[in-house]
Length: 167
Image (cartoon, rainbow, N blue to C red; front, side, top):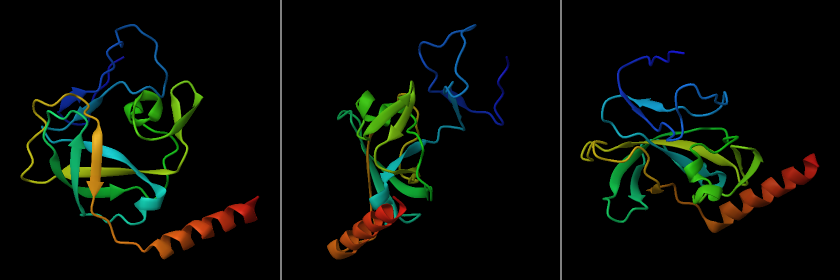
């Protein structure tokens, strides 16, 4: 089988155990093609915080590896609907990540609390992805809209009431 990308780029995130002739699941990630040297920063935001995030908000990525520099970013996209599964798996709790998940089927990691996918881009002053590992886990801090404790409590109570009415 030949796999062709729509444009030139660098193939990354190819599983180390993958080899020619091996059967794979239709849902297995075989790799990604990154266009140019631009960093690809993706993650998840808890549903309680996703409503406070705005496109263009400044952010900072702090890698788990303390020998690496943090990067200045800005928020490009917050998906309006919650993700059904967590991908890449390294972000899930069962692989050392911070997102609590349950495993419904082998490899299907379902978040225990609704998570919205977010996409961030490096600021112009940030370095390119050259020299970085294929995947680097860390934490992103995003400047978000302020919210009062009362507003957060009311929204939580509303969700509980709606859940009880559906039951």
